Length: 80
Image (cartoon, rainbow, N blue to C red; front, side):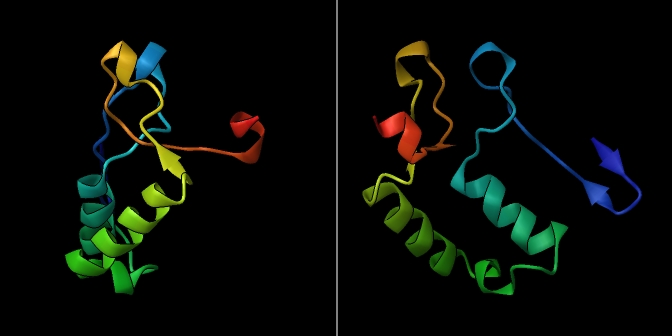
């Protein structure tokens, strides 16, 4: 989508979900879409944070079995 302040790009996830993301999307947003996260304009810093969140189970590819390769936040409730 194009807005007066810039563009937003996303992929639809399983059943049309909009809350999935990829590392590249986050980097593009930090680099070009906002001034709120200057530390993530450095792709290496973003990769480090992304990898840490993945290793801690904070984000997961929850729907790979449905051919949805996006990452999603994984709450304590979902961890059951």
